[in-house]
Length: 201
Image (cartoon, rainbow, N blue to C red; front, side, top):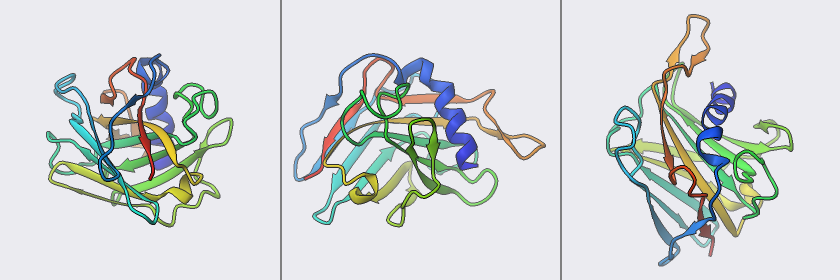
């Protein structure tokens, strides 16, 4: 359901948060690792992101660890969407999502096994067609989604801004399409706080 759920999730929350104002909030990196805090308890029914830890190694592999303590396992009703402004320029990329150039979508096992997909903004929409993502892998354990990808597949980024949307409550219609009518959403950073920022070293 990756392509359909990506579009629906973005449209469902863009008016709430990612089009909001605010400059990127940067965290000091120590040994190429930075921890970003998110507030808790905004919606008790939503997957509640507490922290996001970002790190990179000398080969350019970037690791995102998205901690969701109230969801110890990745359930079928969940989507975790990572929006990435990989040129750190909000004037380029998706104008409704703070200049995002890429999006990584992690889907829970709603219609089959859990999966992760990389999308690129092409000026009109997000597409996975022709987008290299051979290094993209994920795991989910003990309330933490871990996503790894090499910077070369994110435009060889050295400095990027990002935000996370954690969605719960997705159900499957009889048609086989996902239904977002009663979803619950957590946004990191919170609405109106821009994106987090990270430097690849």
